[in-house]
Length: 319
Image: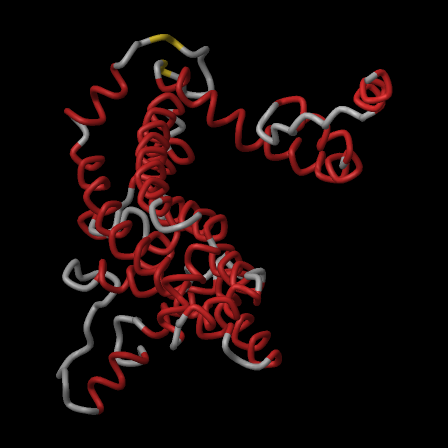
């Protein structure tokens, strides 16, 4: 009996399960990988200075009248009231931003996913080649200016020239100044230039899927690529899909540079004037920083709400 008691006493206790969601475990991982965090420190410092701090400061500045010359004067919610009640151009900008976001955001996201999926099925050389081809427009932010040649409003514009040669139109169309065509042109160019970091994130997501999952799926009776896509690929790409969705949302709501470069700022009858253009107008041209901060705050809240909604939808289909 004594020997049994001694054996029980000598038996080592079972280790306690590790709670991977605890702060202690998170801090342990940080200390374990401190070299990586030290290398990332310059980026975090710049990101904090030029992104986080301006976003935080935009709300208190939005409650003031501030023109960069005089000290900010507190005026409460007057800027926000003026935006939605007195500023007709802002209401037009909201409509234009929603139109562009609805067309460019989801279409860009789905198009990036389909292209990344198709490229993933190619040979290694073609993967690199087509990834570069589709990502190249986002590497040079002003590359969309070449579309000014395509949509030029004279007979020498590429589109006008082709349509007139085929007898489809009799006179040159003003694609960049006629309100009938301006929004369509901006949507086309925005889609063309939207294959950015989200596209690369989806490409990386396809590359990181465990191949054994497809083997197990074949054993379970999956017979074609489409079944693999919906039962294995999409659930396994949860983080990549969420990251690409966040980038697509932010890109869709912050459109403005394409319309300003192609159609001017302000555009004809504010036909492609967006919330981002409105903020740039008051912040960079009129220097009414309080009013511009209020505009940016409205845009930021809209992006947060949309991002939360999209994350809830995607979480139903991913791990």
